[in-house]
Length: 300
Image 1: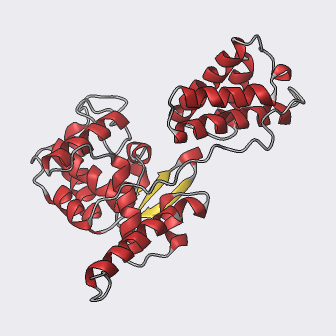
Image 2: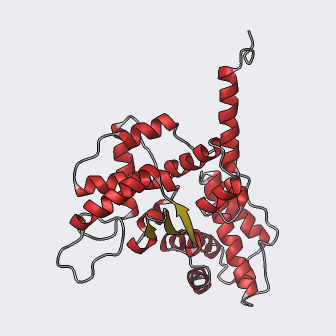
Image 3: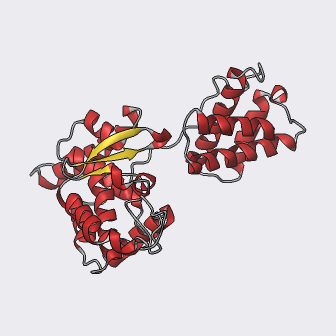
């Protein structure tokens, strides 16, 4: 199956513009699947049956994988077989109309506005790296960016006079996201007084990245994860994840009256149903407000 998997990886890279991180995840899923088939002496797509696919899904559950992980792996395999049929590599389509495993609804973790204020109002080191860290955290929350979108920003993507940053999201889809207020101030201060001190003075190939590491290269995703965790821990937010800042951005926007379609564009969601998860969070907030303020909301 390896050659077929390689063909599919090429399709995802060239036709869909998948990132290296996404490609690695797909390859892990499909190699796991191909290994399962190989143990049963199936090495060609024509030999795959629906019963084998169902058995593989059952093996994932037996291994104790989370429902969301099982769903992702099944989605990868469905896409793989659909590609093989579409490209004429086989007429066998064992995953046609195969339902994805149901995943229990899980609302995203969000910070309160007070928690965000504690995180972003704490003292940052008065150094180029400190200016960078403040700007990165303010931009994650102020613009609702994914970590890969933050680290992928180039200096030509930032237009502070116009109040926008150009972001390349999943599938390299481009969008403009507003940046203003504290995020704009922090980003402007870093670009003016911090970034130049992190850039190597004699490098002939200076990085175009907005966020640089101490060696002048592009800041990595792992470094951002560590940064968020460190600054969160300093104000009592243990184990803070960068995506929590994105979730908090979306939730606080809705609580403030933002239009769902506008929020969809800012987050870069292809389908509005993905954005609608935040309406559930918002309704939870409304119920909490009702219970805490209405004089007859609680039973006596």
